[in-house]
Amino acid sequence: MSVMVNIHKTHRQYTSGQETVPVNGDTVGDCLNDLIERFPQMKTALWDGKGRLKNQIEIYVNMESAYPDELKKKVRPGDEIHITVMLAGG
Amino acid sequence: MAPILSSDELERYDRQILIHEIGMAGQEKLKKASVLICGAGGLGSPAAIYLAAAGVGRITLIDYDQVALSNLNRQILHGEADIGRWKVDSAKEKLGKLNSHLILRISTVRINDENAVEWVTGQDVILDALDNLATRYALNKAAQEMGVVFIHGAVNGFEGRALTVIPGQSACLRCLHRSAAPETGKFPVIGVTPALIGVIQATEAIKYLTGIGELLADRLVVYDGLKAKWSEFKVKKNPECDHCGRPPERKTP
Image (cartoon, rainbow over all chains, first blue to last red):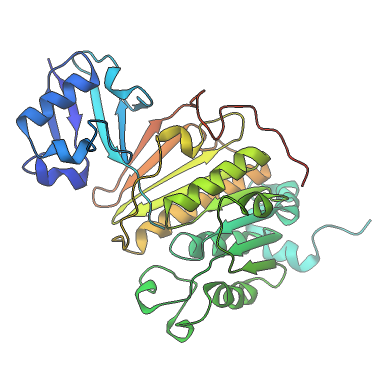
């Protein structure tokens, strides 16, 4: 069983419209790399120029915030990752 | 001692005084309350309308902008005749007509790191009805410093979110992110989204002020209007947070 990544609406243009993508990895970082391997356009959506997660990206594992050490967060098969984005409008 | 609520007010709020959790005591708490609403736009319009209608005694409404035609799809305090007016002037007229018991203070000040504490001081609740992250952070920080409850709301398109911050207890806005994302300028939005989120914020304010219910503390709710789906994410206080990492100390203004 793999880890399921929920793709934010604004990113689905990079995942062929897929709302969820099964990935493999022991940490959130591994899972995101696996996601990028399958959908390379997710790279610029997630990472800034310095190889860090962009400020506006939020990562939740099993509906709980993984901040601040998101990428090191351990995951197990069956876990669920949500990638969401900070909103600013009002 | 004169009663806190007049006979006119008792009749006006009759239906909500009937709500067991609110009752007379809750209504009196609302009347004694002071709420700062930052932003008289998409979120601030419904929030201000419902808080005024519910009988919150004092509202301070801040917005440095003027009404534009492109605001009218969502900023329901304003109409065509208000284009070019200060949003807070337009809002004052509407809210005054809605509830003459309301004591409304308005300002066109731009909230920033320097003046945020001054505006937060003396308030019971801050409603973040802003349209940019930098000001949200300034207000979040001031609210943490002054120990004032901060109710965040934000929208984009059909998506919206809300979080209530109890200073010293629950995760603040800054606990969620490393820093503000770059501003992107015009954001897409349809009025029904800030309508829902603004009313969630007003509901949170009413619950906090009357001491009832369960707040959205450490609970980020995210609404997807297209799927008609609410999600709730658990967030946690970041001990290293530079806004709330230390116990809040109430400053003497």
